[in-house]
Image (cartoon, rainbow, N blue to C red; front, side, top):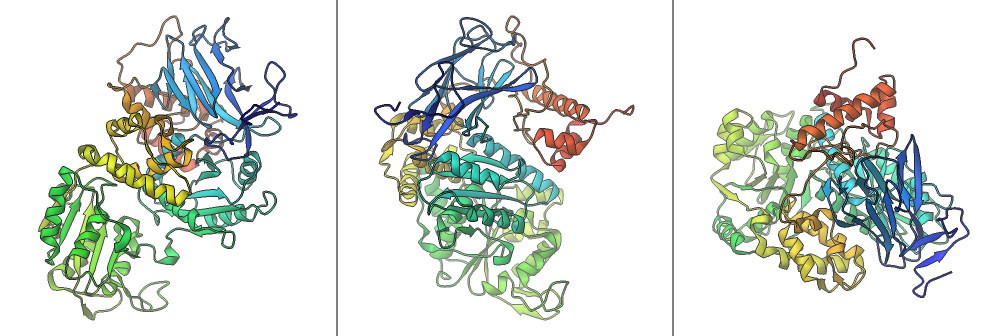
Length: 638
């Protein structure tokens, strides 16, 4: 039976609701699923040691609670009799709290009503339910929510910086209309259980490959692209590797999407920056666009214009994503060197043993692997500008060599005593406090004073709220062209949310949020429900109550996994008749929860870290790191 819109239909597949009807969610509804595709959407939860599944029927409310009159009973004392109502409507899943005592939580925030996406986890009392897509046989397609994947990438960044190991991101898109279930299963077949997948708009997915280097990531991407998905359709893959492609989650996701756009049926895999392609060197494109400046930024631009004509070094100081690279390009293009090269180097992305070679070049035989003479950044940029991004990450030896270049305009290649003279202007950028680093000895004091002739402080986007609307409209037009979508504007309610959000990732995060909204929007206007949950939560006047969500944890190293195989603690939250007391320090509760979760899982695994890591769905290195941070140790009696 098909509805008049053709969005919902019966199927002969074996997953059914209580009425004996099998319903599917058609992505003909412009939602986060592929057009002309069908996915069964269900709630999944763990109870009495096994996974339970309940299919959601379209436009049929499902009330979850502890007893009658709830339609779905879960025997847990932290649930109210009628705790929450779930509705699959218009291609989206909504949850309404029904006045429960222990609350309904999404992404750690207590909500009264919220839209939830495939892969999201919703916590009712002490019960974690996950909205999941099912395959033809009722099996889970094991998809993540976008917010959960973002947290996983942030966690992986923390781990990668600590252990100095790479990881990869893939952005996979389909080149023609095929069933969502089909291409997702093909994608999943090429991955390991530890790899994480989240849908991205219509007909695309993002994939996190933990602890994966460029060679292995390329092999996985090629396998995905080579897998048949029916007819002439192909999966096109963008592949990027940290730290080559960026230093934060927003940069990495944007780089993966850009690589996927370059992929084509003839070349189905496109790679982002890699070590083989000059890891940290990039010619700047002066035609990339100008700057939208509000009142706070106008003073910054005036300062930039005043120093552009000189050759004095400039330090651009500001949070990640505030536009430091754009201002560096403006300094270069507004000065007398605009006809020459501007070369950018990300100091945080260079392996420590290759920093001097990258900056100043090397002679043949200078070290193992130096098979031929190689020019460095400063030789390549002679007569132009070198933009040293994340300069606070430079190791001491490179700091000393850079100081000499700034003082005498000369350097020597690695493996040579011959000095080479260059005429280069240096523009540096950092989000760190270089003055404090110099005072503590973490950064050379003489280099700091040589660099800091002019320091330009760039205000974060939360202090430039008059720019949010024009920036959003600019990014909307660009995203519409890039994704082939005709989205005309942003609803006033959505603009209000954009204005209220704190934007920790600044302009880069705003661009990513707008592109995602353009991709998932069902109409010609971006509505509030098209924005990520973290942005929609900005409408709350006060900071919402936060609790540890099942499988979650606190920064800096959250356990962002749905711990299906891990034993659960019966402590938080309290039974419904005696709700947990409010006001206790949240971070301490979360860390206690995480420590107990790790301890219980390790104990159940006989203190085998490999087995515990498998059950928790994380790399062994991450488990070991969290054990060290939280002080989880094997008892001496074991």
